[in-house]
Amino acid sequence: MTSPRISPAAWDDAQAIALRLAQRAELDARYGRDDHEPGTPPSAGDISLFLLARDPDSGTPLGCGGLRDLERGRAEIKRMYVVPERRGTGVSVAILRALEDAARDRGVETLVLETGTEQPDAIRFYEREGYARIPNFGAYAASDISICYARPL
Image (cartoon, rainbow, N blue to C red):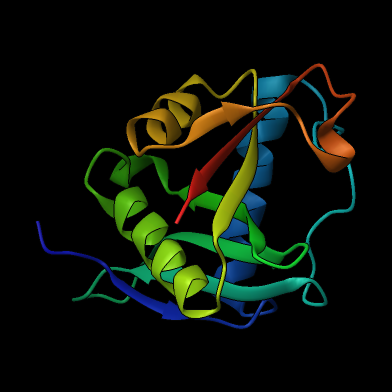
């Protein structure tokens, strides 16, 4: 299988919106509710980079991920998502590596992220990719469904 083509996209790009809506529907179903994300939802105003992964031949969107700048030297991964039929094919690793490379280029020293208790596949993925569990931070600190991770770059 060929590697996905990964490129920046506007937050309001139609394919980006469609992927985030698919992610939201999946998470709503997993958690049985629609209030599973503490804190301020990401937006065009606070996501400094949003990437789309596309099939190199057809251009079909396969996944996405973004960076939210935090305090100096730290950024948060937001909206990592891969369409179900392409999970396990390397798309998520390609997106994650592209986000890490972009973060390094921007002077980020540590990437952090939040996932949830009903996302065991995400938990396994981030741990496999070298992210270590940390105390819940920021808006996630009091959340009983949040699990936070960090990785120094």
